[in-house]
Every structure is written in C-alpha cells, then in structure tokens.
Image (cartoon, rainbow, N blue to C red; front, side, top):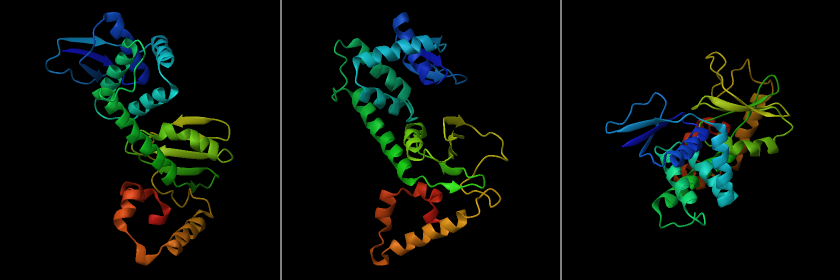
Length: 253
C-alpha cells in the first residue's frame, strides 16, 4: 500500500496530486502529519506543500471544468467527511486523465459521491444563512456563534459581508474554534485561544449592549405572537429547523 502524508490543507492536497504525476504512482491512502501509518503500508511519501505546484494544478483544473464544478470540489473539501480528500484526488485524476475533462458521468461512483457530498454541504451553508442570530455587544459589534455539522462557514461569509456591510460583526465557529471578523472594510479570520476571551453561545451581561436584551424580548414576543398553537407540528419544525441549531436561536430560549 502506497501512502502519501501531507499537511491536511487544500494546497497540500493539490501539491500531492502534482507529485502523483511526477512520481507516476497513485496513493491508496492519505494521512496527515502525526497520524499513524496504516499497518500494510509499503511506502510512505512525504508531500511538502508548494503553493506554486498547487497553483499550477488549480489553473489546469479551471481550464478543464466549469466554475460550478470547481465550487463543487471546494464544497467536498469543506465537508470534513472521512476519505473526502482521497475521493477528491481520484476525481481530479479522472478529470486530468480524460481528454474532454468529463465530470458528469454519474455512473462513476466517485463523481456521484462527490456530487452528493457537495449537496449536503450546500444545504448546511443554506442553514447558516437562515439560522445565524446576532447579538449586539457593548462596543457595537454584532456577535453570532455557530457550530455547523461541516466546515461550511467559509462558504457563507461572502453573503454576510455583502448583507451587513455597514456593521461590525464576528461570526465564530465554536466547534472548530475560529471565525471571521468584519471591521467595515475587510473580513479577517480570527481564532481565540484564550479561555477568558473565548465567546460562548450567549454574551455575558457585561459584554452585551444595553438595549440587546430588550430586542431579544421583542423578537421572542413576535415569535410567540405569530405561533398558531393549534397548528404546532414539532416533527415538521425539527425537519425544517434542525434541533442542533435551537441553542443558538434567540426565539427558542
């Protein structure tokens, strides 16, 4: 069994694909730095991430497939599903080996699986757009905690940058411990490692703006007033609004 070890970054994966063609050997497994080598490995090749090699692979891919397909591949990468990196490598190899860059042959298991994973990630991105709830901090920054099933936050940030361009905000992924901060000009990725500064689901009273609690009560009141008790359907509600999001929703507190 041939194994490639890389740094678990997207650039690292593209570099690994570049090395596949240089070495003329395809890995049967991909592992990250510090991960144990599979028992039956016969050769372990170390991949050193090279932005130049990665750029060449990505440019070549863009010449062979549409932007939609490139986006789909990024969605698969952000899925964090086990084996998705090896799936991507097999998919990309088929694209480069095919003269016409075929990508729509759904009789091919890899291509069908990639499409299905991308759809699940796209659905999670859509839920982020629907269920993010901001809280106003004392300094005027709007804070929203999230914890999506997959790493869909980078795919949704463009929407929030365009939609809330006149407000400072921080959207933080509590599960992965990183987020994005917008300062009215640029969006910056941030990671808070200090336990004392790590935000939670609800802002402390000392961090919350004076009128935030009032607006939360108003929103809850509106939610209750719009509810038709005789037509409450908990099963349908959980289907349309997954329960794992409820702890972040002001109206469900």
